[in-house]
Figure (cartoon, rainbow, N blue to C red):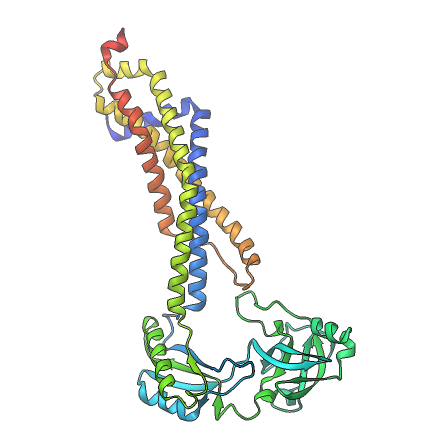
Length: 409
């Protein structure tokens, strides 16, 4: 019997018991959908994190930031122009190095109202159109360029310290031993924006960067940005070498340490952890496939017992035992492959529905999107076909071993 005839015969046999075939297919589909959903979410999380934090291989130059820390709350400059020159001289792959000050998530000591403490401060070069003022005004151009010492504070902080946003206007706040006049109160944003980046208006206090740092930008800074003519894979290694060099030869090596966050290494560790969790959860979800496989085996045993006369007729007209076995084995595999494809589709849809909810639940604000890879498709197809083969072979062999004489009796 040709393969085409076996497929047609198997399909027609499944159509005879539609309800039983449908329920068996649903069982396989649920198991595959569970596995595909887990894989889609896990791969989506890994891809999102890698796209956001890894070096971009499409860029001509790779960039990295090395920062200086002393373990103190107030900012301290650890880089000078001499350090910039050393880095550019010692590392030919560095095309440009320049000083930069931190502007996001600064935790600075100060006094607001009568309350002394540590406040989250952001520094800005320009006003944001997304920032909504409750009262007062935004910084004007002269302040942004380094003029008067003015500050904006969040509505929550104003109500907490002054009991009213309007009462905060005109008061003085002391940040890092300098006084600033409150000229506006803004509605505080979430700490992270939709892309996962820090939102400056998620801080307690906003200051003009030029005012806070004064004229220090061109001579010193607390972080160093380097532009490197290397591949994305080599960028982390080179940045690590620069960090080690600065810890030995940097101008402020005795007062603190130079640090570099190796995101490539962190991402590898993160991905390994995600793979472990995904594997464990997928294994648990895969138990339903085992149960569905038993259902396939049970259905095929029932089908063999009900079709004894059909098997006898086929044997009588010349069908071989191998033909009989393949007929029932193909029926089992068709059931599971159909279920696998349906499960793959529903698993993909379900993972795309769950990831937005996962993004909302994450405090980072990073938008996660499900990623259904070729690996997930191959797993769903291969596992479903394997289930049909494993759980269908025993009933198929039983059918093939039926004796024509015993059937005629």
